[in-house]
Image (cartoon, rainbow over all chains, first blue to last red):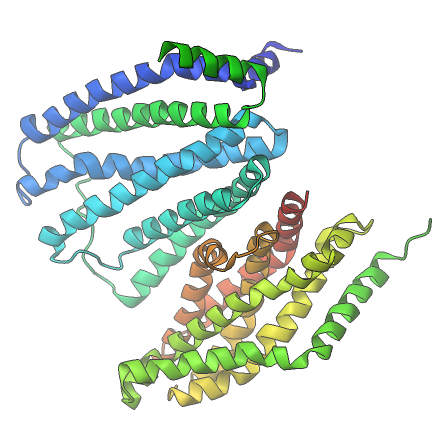
Length: 252
Length: 227
């Protein structure tokens, strides 16, 4: 067996994953909290106000990283779903299902911060803009995966069915985005557009990138924490899981 | 042991499903009645103003037919799952996607085709301009098989569940969004006197793709839920 396969088998085994995720999780959380602090200070205090929107633009330091994460996590989930369905790796099932609620949360944050920003800027909480609509559909795709996973009794079968749905969704996301864009431009030529500062100033860009990195690290920290719990749940009958439960029971 | 040919297996599935529908032919009218009632609700809610209704008529007819199709989806595998026929279908030596395609085809014939036949009545009730009607029918003829095919994939995932209605809607409707946009878009363009062929061609392209891929996906999903 070559080294890569060996590596996969080793870290794909639930006890090793449980141990490794427990080791790395707090570090991810810690690093992301530090980066959040730096990014928010840079974005809310150091960066100058926008010449057009003054201070209202500052919500992009939450909104844009969350929007990036909503797509990144869907992609991450779909890749894991693919691995879970093709190679039947248990850990990938767990990772795919554990990432769905986090992705749904980021999508909800994107929609919420977007409409909070939209009220003073566009004068409305919601507009049927292409990007807003496809983000809303993305939220429904996440909720569908979570709903299907929770609706089936057998955990592994549930994970496989939901993983399949996630893969169907990944085909759907670009189609929805494209069709909604077409639909919107057909109806109304020039509606309110997202501001297009293609050349964003450096003083605004670095906090944005720091925040993007912080949300990524937060995602992995949160993912590991969630995946550990579900691994323990799935492997409840095994010796290592019992030993682990007894050990942490003694510590408490 | 000798098996029949794949063709005869498909013919058997087709004949059985058609016969089952024929024995309970009253049920075939249910989606039509449902769509009629939904269409009736809109003038009651929005007011009977003919011009206003005409403007949104195509959209209402599409949404009514889409929801009627959504509710009818549950019958695609339900009875077969309950009496075990579906498992026999999965176990059969013939390609499952092909057999499922036959089932989906019959389901479309018995639930969606009556809706298309009835669509001119619905459109007339909402004062849809008569020059838009052919476009509406063409869009429906392309869109409803697409809806059946996409819906079948999701139904296959929820087949073992007792109460899957709301969940099924959550799974299916995001997939229906592009279909609805193109189908309603064609009618809107026709009503505004603009060229309407492009969205119809997109629908046709999507249908060609779904005809090939959806039965495969449906079979894969069914194997996951029946295991």
